[in-house]
Structure formats: C-alpha cells, structure tokens
Image (cartoon, rainbow, N blue to C red; front, side, top):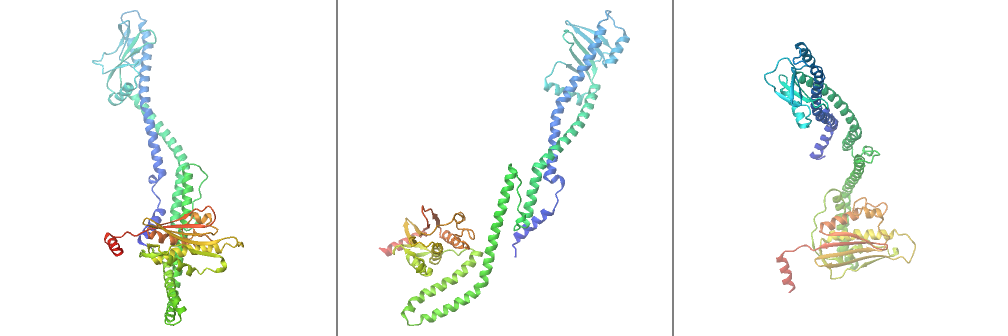
Length: 499
C-alpha cells in the first residue's frame, strides 16, 4: 500500500496536469501584459518631451505669423494704424495685442482690448528641458482661461516681437495632440508587444512549456522510457537545461529500476526464506545428533558445522533485510581477526587445482573492536570476490601467481585491514560504480551486492573502505576501523586488571 504522502503527491501531480490555468496566470499571459506595460511606459517617456516640444512649436508658429504681419503694420508711417486694419490682423493671428520692440523702444502695433493682467510670460528662446516640460504640464492642467505674453526675436534683425493671447486654443491643441499620440502609442505598443511576445514565446515560453509538460508526464509514468524529454539542438541555457533534464530522468529511471530489482529480490527471498529455514532447521537437528557421537574427527568438525548453518540462516535473512530495511547496528566486541580469517578460508573451500594461494598474515596477537559476525561477512565477501576473479582468469600459464593476502595493523586507535589479490583487477565500469548494488559488479552476471553490503557494514562500524591503486594487476582494498570509545571507568578497570 502506498504511503499517504505518496498518494497526496500523485494526486497533486494529476490535478495540476489536468488543469488549464487562466490566460493571464500563465507565463505567456504575464509576459504579454508586462510587454504592453513596458511599451506604454516607454511611450510615456517619449510622449512628455514630445508634448513640450509641440507647445513650443505652436507658440513659435504663432509668433512667426505675427512677425510677418508686423512687417506690414510697421511699414505704415502714420502714428495711428487704422482700427479696421488692427482688427483684421488680430483676428487673423488670434491675438489680443501686438507690439514691436526695437532699440529699447516698444511700439504697440495693434490692440483690441488690453487685458487687466498677464498670467504668464513665455520667452520663446528658452529651451531648458525641465522648464519647457514644466510649462507644458502647467498649460494642460491650469490653462484654458489665462492670458499669456509671448515674445521672441525676428530673425537676425535685432527686433523683438511680442504678443498677448489666450492660452485656451493652445491647451485645446495640446489635448488633441495628446489624444492622437496616445492612440498611436497604444497601437505601436500593441504591435511591439505582439512581436516581442511572438519572439519570446518561440524562443522561451514554448520550450519551457514543453519542459513543464514533459515533467508532469514523466511524474505520472517515471518508468516509461518514452516520457524522457528529447532535447532540442540548441546551445543556449534552455538547451543545456533540456539535456540535463534528460540525463536526470534517465538516471532516475535507472534508480527506479534498481529499486524495483531490490524489491523483487526481497520478495523472492521472502518466498524461499520459509522453506530455507525448514531445511536448515533439519540440518541443525542432524548436527545435534552428530554432536553426540564419539568419533573425534566428527567432534572436531561439528562446532564449525553448527556455526556455518547458523550463518547460512543469518545470510538468508540479511539478503532480505538489504532489500527492505537497514542492517542492525553492530554489536562490537574485542575480536581476534586471525581466527575470523581462518574461518573465512575454511568457508571458501578453495579448490587446490585452481592454484590460488590463501595467505593469512594477520598477527596472532592482533585484536580490534568490531562485530564478529558482520566483520566475518565483510572479509568473506571481499575474499570471495578475489577468488572468483582469479578463478575466472583462464589463462593457462603456470608462471602466473594467484595469491590472496590478508594483512592487519594498527595506527593509534585505528585498525587497518588489507585484502589484496594478484588477479586481473577491477574493470573501469566497476571502479566507476564501486559499492553500488547492481552496478558495481566486477564480473559478468554479478549483482554487485557483495561490495555494497561490505560498504554498508564498514560504515556502520564508523570506518572507511577504499580501493587502493596498484601500479600492476590485482585488487587491493584497505579497511580502516576506529576503536569504539570507552568510558573512563572501563579504561581504569582494564588498567587495574592488567597491573
């Protein structure tokens, strides 16, 4: 039965995979809105100085028109310009008064009705951006019913033309211009946003959506090879991400396959475990009967037979445990390693015809702190691998040395155990996947469980195991096991017993 957390995760994946997000909650919709917004912001930043420039041009055109009319008015030598002429000029130029200043003297050329006050003075030669923009906003916000005085030079003549006019027509012209620019800006922003959206959608959004859909599909069927994403032939970040995702999915499928293999192995062992126990139980009864015989040879081998049967029972249980739960914590005691190695040699039963020499170079006095049963399994697995490797070396050459050597020593509180053989050595694939079940096997058809179990048991002792590089052929493992810390009271007890 699946765990509640796994069911919840699968339900969440299914729910999100089948749901269609609203348009503006999708990545593409958000991108479209942001592109429109940024386009409008850019248009506003362009619009503000454009509006200020439009105001200056409108005033300049009005001033130039008045300047042209003033030439006609100034040509009249009479002191008083006819009223009808003045009215026609003022009506044509849309002004209330026109004056000409020359050599420090001003001459009123035309006037309809002199206003009581002038609200704003505009020098057409001032082009400071901040001032121009500020005056443009002032006209749009506060204008419409004000009288402004506009003045500026007439070409290079040294004369200055002045006029008084209402700013209502100017404000209306600016508002019409703003409306037209706003419509054009919206149109340009929409076109720009559409083009940017199409480009980014093709380059980014679609590949990301494809990766997202693939991950959801892969989550529903992680064991289906067809669900692995097929990377596009692109060299940018998305191409790298697709290739990395494909590698991750392939690795996950391998891991799931290994986990399934382990589960199947555990199931198979659990099925045969019951029958195996019955068979071994019968063997135990037979060994108990043998123990009652008086034959000295049988009496010498019966204890070893009993221990062998007990270990066989434990092995059938630990294989199942490896596929399901963790190894039990080691029950550490002081152990004579040489005795364990001798038992391993007897368990291996090396065929004399194989030419393999087993050398136990562990000193008789060497003791270290470990779980005897678990460390027996460690040495047995390593030695069995070495024997199998040297037995599989079928070269018919009497000069080839086949030797398995077990050594031991101690540095401080750390015990160092070496298992070395003169076999053909580990292949490259086994070195790359060392201590990994089902992938670190050194021989064809092997499972790699032996080294995986060794690695787990050594780590349970707080130690390390390393494959030492040899210049020639052969395989050499080095195990380092630190002594178990003891209390001060226990150390004093040992010291007193020795003294």
